[in-house]
Image 1: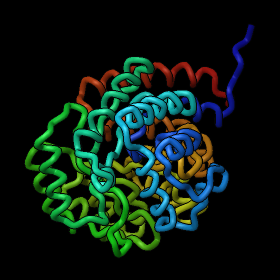
Image 2: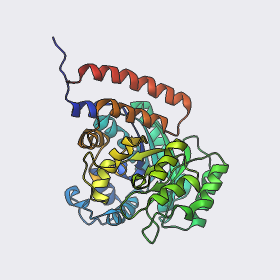
Image 3: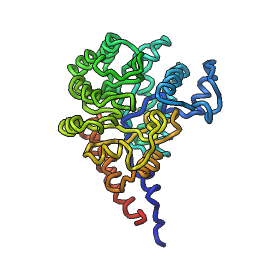
Image 4: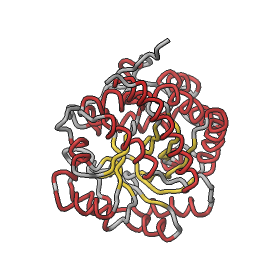
Length: 350
């Protein structure tokens, strides 16, 4: 019996994937979000997921993003969100490795300590790793609405409570002025770098951002990789800087249609980044809020941008190269991905 061939859209869906840019609270399902809100007596604007996540722009979305943290309170909540998020991502997009942005500062406002947030998340993710074979690391995210001094104190908390899974420092939210302003947190980044944490930052995300923020994240913060970074294509000098430094970017196609109103097509900034020789790794950013999943980001996002199969495989491998895990885990991921590529290539309709 002849093997059933698969379409290119299915091929993209089935490719093995890493995810390096997802915010922890957004990995829960809408149904679990509503359930936890009811458990803790949190009033939501709507209990209907079809209307709960309607946003006009990035600033509007961030309001919902902040109140989402209020529904996760108990250790069991954190563990459940962690575990269920992996289970669904394996089914929806063949996830093999993921890094989470966790913002303890949001939960501190609700009386939870750093370890009360981090430890149950690790417990849930370790259980998911045993059950689904999906590796993970955690990047602690600065709340940019807080001060530079608060960011330094957050880094001190990371250093005071070392965990093998916690490997980096990143960012959440926007400043109170709704700007990126990466240099505001330079002291925190210097402290993190001095103690071996790996660094990333959200910059160049929307039309309101600037290529200069991308440069600052590279030259001032010393980032090893960057999140979004789309405005980089508007400054060839910054493109050359990033390419020369080997900076990789985590990009989130679907979020750009919501937060920036951009169209997913071959003229999209992500496609222009790829064409400029920049290494990109595809992620969801905030899957629950944007009604997306990792499979959709590839199946619809890459397809709409005219990305071919060889480039899609390179993007998947770039996700391994950009990861903050150790070299042995990267070696195992590459072997796994390469074997799956061979099997999928044999089934792809030409």
